[in-house]
Length: 110
Image (cartoon, rainbow, N blue to C red):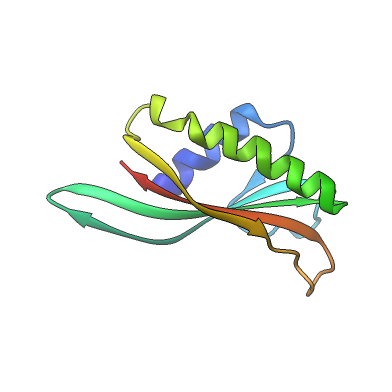
């Protein structure tokens, strides 16, 4: 499961927690991993993964997003991931819980 691969990869390398679902007790800073789409052609899998970087300030959310992107850009060196391309990233402040966040969307081939 590619979501677990991304979760484990980021968990090993980030100094903040990484989750696949919103935690009940939200820490100040964390990353949320979500698969938003995918497909398969000729036995080659693809997935679109959204990575939401939460932090107490806009600057800290942007900074965490930058670190997440740098790690994801290095991901093709890992086992079973052959392509990891940034689709887009942007300010995605969560007004429902009044938390700053950035979102980076990646297209992975694995």
